[in-house]
Amino acid sequence: MTSLAGKTLFITGGSRGIGLAIALRAARDGANIAVAAKTTEPHPKLPGTIYSAAEEIEKSGGKALPIVLDVRDEDAVKQALEMTAQTFGGLDIVVNNASAISITDSQATEMKRFDLMHQINARGTFMVSKYAVPYLAKAENPHILMLSPPLDMKEKWFAPHTAYSMAKYGMSLVVLGLAGELRRKGIAVNALWPRTTIATSAVQNLLGGDSLIRASRKPEILADAAHLIFTTPAKSLTGQFLIDDTFLFERGVHDFDHYRVDPSVALAPDFFVPDDSVPPVSLAKVGS
Image 1: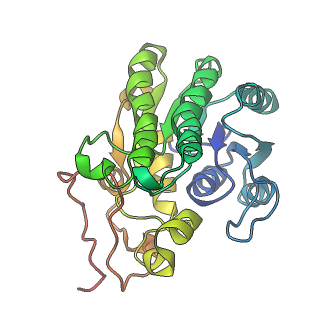
Image 2: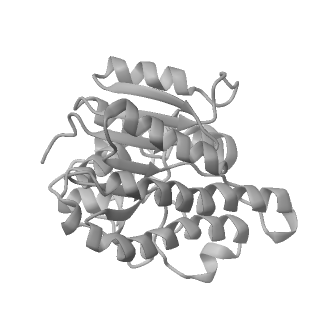
């Protein structure tokens, strides 16, 4: 299978950034996409709402269902999944992209922020996946994908921001467990993570501003990797913690320069990428 035409995706946090890029890549195939996110009104620092995302999806060739969703709300999650399945006649793919971030050490992390990260990242991912399983079990090639890191248990990934790392690794633990639980049902469960920083509003506003954006890759690299995952038979790809460029390279993609925001700048490595993961292409500035 090389196309997602007619497939139905449920994407949390799909109103902007990586979630929207994955949605638009699927839309070009003619997929149906439920955009499940909280943003309904434009934000001065965060472009995009569920409605603007739905409009982009429709213009790209897909069908869109904007859903106002807080992934912490159990009843709302159940209703959103049911609405998606009823609207499009089923559910094929779930993307757990919604995430909260706070790059703070223990003394600077307020407990309400700790709770928010765990409720959205770990609990939200578990809950959306849990309630999606009955729908996915009826699909021809069902996939659950988490935008979460490899389980590389090193002190350096935790010491600077323990609370955030715990929450993101919580998402990856859901991958580890559900991949084993759902293997007999033929439902693939995988994680996808970027080798470099990605040009999103979160990176610009919270991590490094314009300078880090220039040293980043575009969200489309993750969208293309996700598309390859979703078009792979579920029974042959599950329980994997995939790095975007390595996975694409292994599948025959060898030109990565077009994913760069600024080819004249060396790429910045992302958090959580294991030391033994060797980049398939140079991260130095192009031409160096």
